[in-house]
Image (cartoon, rainbow, N blue to C red):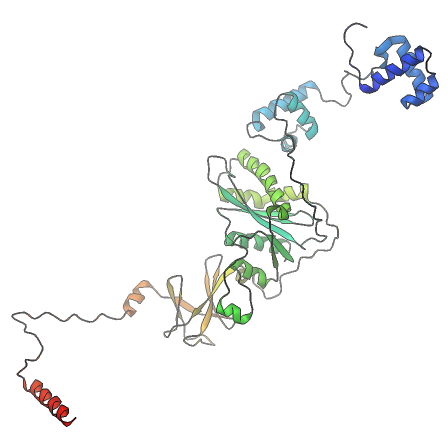
Amino acid sequence: MSGHLRMSKKERNRKSVFEEVSGGRRSLREAAKCLGLSYRQCRRSYKRFRAQGDAGLVHRSRDRPSNRGYPASFKARVIARYEERYASLKFGPTLAAEKLAEEGLAVPAETLRRWLQAEGHAPWRRRRRKHRERRERKEHFGELVQMDGSHHRWFGSKRPEACLMNMVDDAQGTTMSSMCEEETTEGAMRLLWRWVETHGIPRALYTDRKTVFITDREPTLEEQLAGEEPKTAFGKACAKLEIAIIPANSPQAKGRVERNHGVYQDRLVKEMSLKRITTIAGANKLLHNGFTDHLNAKFEREAADPADYHRPVPKGVELADVFCFEEYRVVQNDWTVRYQNRHYQILRENKPLPKPKDKVLVRLRLDGTLHLVYRGKPLAYRTITVKELRSRAAPKKAAVPKPTANRPATRKPTHSPWRQNCTRMFAETKKKK
């Protein structure tokens, strides 16, 4: 056979053994034992070697198209569609295969990876990460939920950054997210509120040490007397629902949610690019209407123990009064309360009616409504307008007019009888002393 012949290492090994059999240095049974073949298989292979030479050892399916292979026309359609729609957005083979399947071009991700690499696209090699000791997942759904914010240019490199608030269950990887402008207390409260309504109250939250979740301020006098630790507004909301907040010492400690950020930064950015979504409202509409459900259906796993550790919301507890901002204010002598530079008049018909110098709880809900609470009961009040505040202000003292030629000074002259009597009275008093 002329030309070059490609042979595998196994085929080259068979060639050297069969050459020894041909030279009489080894028997066919010894060759079968050396090559790990049965005697009948070794005899058939040696027969082809004697008849065809080295070409008889080459696998007969080499360079033949597979019966399960895709037609060349289908491969060309897939590559053309990828280059037309997904190459500019830097879709990886896994996500691109999912999108192509939605368009009727179903192909396995690894097959697509080989096709694209052959066409000169990126190799998509996995990054090596620093070795860390593995922590086993929690066994129950709701036993520990990781929470964090991801700052990223979600709407493209030419638009400002936004923050994706994300929650991931440690046991089974269930995720829930919401887009915000910044990582704020309100954003964290709204996301946890949705989680509680959907799944129930989790046992604990695993967060970082940002001031949204924990605080390092000194306790106030009231907190010292009550024996309480200082809490943020988010921490107070969690305390009402008996949710423990566990701060992590490093990003790798809460790796479940950190890795999940990468999934969103890959898939959500590309999904919003395809649908031309450029606003936070549009992103939340996409997240809340099927996108996270699709991620959960794809990446969620079963917990080690099927028991659900989420607790139902206690009866009588209104979540709007849990996820809110609360501060105490002192009642003034005119039964008014001041909060955020506004004045509120407590009405007389309240029972019980707080006394001046008593403290009332001012509760600002996330919808912007304000509620005053005294001894666990809401207070009726009205907002004092700016016009009323001006009318209540004390009038200024009238300025004393300056003496003029037409208006002499009002002070009495020194020769007046009144001043003479006073001078004489002081002089007599001094002599008696």
